[in-house]
Image 1: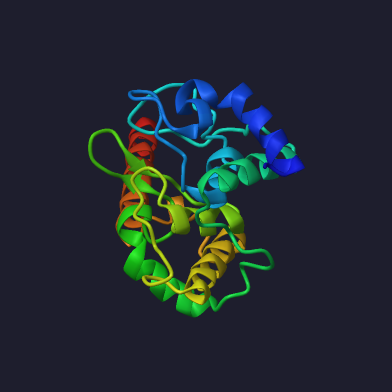
Image 2 (image 1 turned 135 degrees about the vertical axis):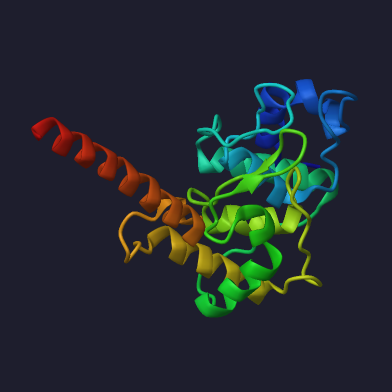
Length: 217
């Protein structure tokens, strides 16, 4: 017997999700996978980032403004999927109160190869990419680590403890609010890109200066 919230979630599911994921969230071949056992965390991530409902099939489903914006409706969908088969859920409470320094080290070891050192994202194979993390909330980050959406691996509690997940989140939230002390960060891609930008700007300035001097003479 479904709770009142889960029953409301079922109605929302049958309006927005059933076409791709099928009756009872069993999945539809060629359209969408089964949602049995994915848990509330997967629903929270996919719905709050606007990836679901998806506009169509593709190599990558990108972040967009969410279609379902009422937090109560999102919770009802989560309750419905949870009632069908359980699964991981994002814990309540403050998720960004970790150790920023420890989180930076963990991020560089586990995440930077795809998301880049500054969290700006990066290219993968076959038209896929690791998205930038500038707009991700603490709950979305935790949910992504729990569920491994799309090309991302799952980081269960045996790979990264709950506290280590919070440390990574604290580091990324700090990046979102931290200003670049050197000025323009150029996407925080590192010294090579910054040096190249300075070189190109300098060369252009020298060329125009030379032309100006030649014109004067």
